[in-house]
Length: 539
Ligand code: ACM
Image (tube, rainbow, N blue to C red; front, side, top):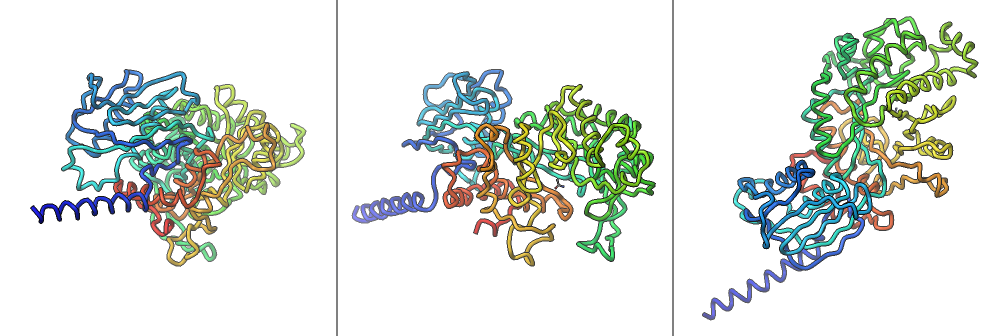
């Protein structure tokens, strides 16, 4: 009896210590991005085989997602759906009284979890938050679990910015469909909503276009890649690189993204960064060629000719692209298009004369205007990199500000929508540590997680009215040196976690130390998902 008492006392002491330790070293609500309003409550909801999942047909997709989230912990449980239960229900609801389009309200008490959204997107984000209230259990332990606990809480949440994006360049290196889906999962997990798919480049054309088969027969293949940074003298690795997405694969990815409430913006680069297309159809070039799919990095002089045949080709290509991507935007590039060839081209000069354009920048503007007019006529809007400001902005264009923030400021002052992607904060191809020797080869720069977290997308130079044109921001992932999916994960994680919070959470609630503590939990989830994140970046 005495022994029993002693054991009891020690046990109580230990439990007390444990609770203290938990409270001291990590918050229970380790959610990224941090919800706008979170009120902790006492108690726990117990998920068990008796938990009934309640949702209407309108929320079938979200209900299926909920089930899969719970089955990560209780893989053999087939949760009852729409069964009456007074003790344990998780209910998903559409509710017009929820304020924001992407907003949700999540309530957890000991008997019931309710997630309300104005739209299914809001409900889905509520579920992403719920997933982060679940414990970080190791995969191995899960099969023996009978119940899972979720801490009680009240959350009222909606995003600060409407555009929360991640970009991926599949031109420099090609990544398979499975990885593209994983990338979309990551975007959704971070309650981001846009995937900017950079599909064409000097070094590879990656989208099947049925009317122009040589784009992929020739343009999707390069004979080799420059070895590390051996620009001059050039040294190639002798290893061919190829790959493209068929239209069927693209349809599959687009449909998958829709289930994750992610919109895909395809990018078809013009008038520069088009060497792979010109290798396939040299007659569309402004120079004399010969053209070969690029094997080294940088900005090339080769550019589309502004002749009628080129516009016919691009309109045909874009017609097939439009049919694949239901979103409202098509990104048309517009960046880094040297005017060297247009300066020398009689045809280019004759168009400048005929159209009364000021110079070659005017010609680029004419080029983009025509493409915009075509896309607008098909019900699509264009996005272009900030060079599309040069020579005059097309009337309805959205500007992606990448060479710093000035382009974004200028565009917003002209009352054009803007997506901020300044290199200093949003280029995830930069080094993330000053210890460059210990890092995999990268393009340069230095953009740490903390730096990303410090980013403020709305420039102070804008008035309140002008600030409304800043739709949000995006992380850019140029893959010159990222040969593998592991490497992409390493460069993206956890920097995109920091950007996600910048874009979602109220500015006043942002706190680096608190974020870092929550990040320690999130990366454990990354571990469970076999994601390769930059471990040193959270030390
Ligand atoms: C870019 O980084 N060239 C948009």
